[in-house]
Amino acid sequence: MNQTSPHATDTPACCVLIPCLNEARTIGAVIESILAQNIPVLVVDDGSDDGTPDIVGRLPVTLIRHQERRGKGAALRTGFRAALEHGCEGVVSMDGDGQHVAADIPRLLAAARRYPGHIISGARIRHRERQPTYRRRANDFADWGISWAAGQRLVDTQCGQRYYPREALEMADINSGGFAFETEILIESALQRGVRVVSVPIESRYQGDMRLSHFRPVSDFSRITAGVVWRILRAGLMCDHLRSIRNQAPLVFDPDAETP
Image (cartoon, rainbow, N blue to C red; front, side):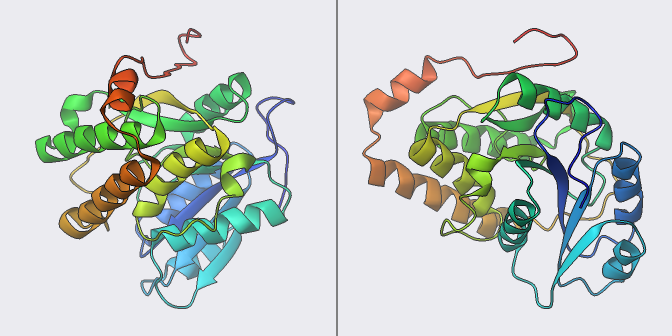
């Protein structure tokens, strides 16, 4: 895997990590858009049966396959471990369905250069009105609870387009699974290693021609919520802690504006 980034010499060696399941319609175009920026790509296929691995296998990327479906969290874990083995100091995670675009990668990396050792998260706050109302309300509730557990004010905690530094990659073995892993990594990186999160504004994309999300609103959101509540109780983070977080401003950086 090529370890260099074309964007700046002080950008830590990184790759783009795509966990995917049955993305044959879109995965080829997503990967090619990333390769056009001369950024190495690592794909973890979570047991696809629609030809996704065949499409990925014809492209100059690293492909790891799960023979059976283990969930997105397991795919991210596999990718984190592989990235560390290849000498990466960070990874940019993206979904394979086209919701995330390669054009935002340089903006995430610019934020990573400005805030080393931070998780850099895309925040879908541009044209937020495009989000379905139920998703927007659910995301707002998740932001409130996860901010409480992580001890910092966060924005759009459910966005999967993120830059993870080594400090987060090394926490691949935290006990979680499915979509809850992306929540756990925010909380545990903050509590155990003091990792803060920077939000970079990106577009809200909910085109009608996208495939249905693998996210199961009832079961996955219930699992995420239960995990957050347990973390709050375990750490003894009661009302005074919540009030201090509500008084914080989220750390938002827009590289296009060049102002924090």
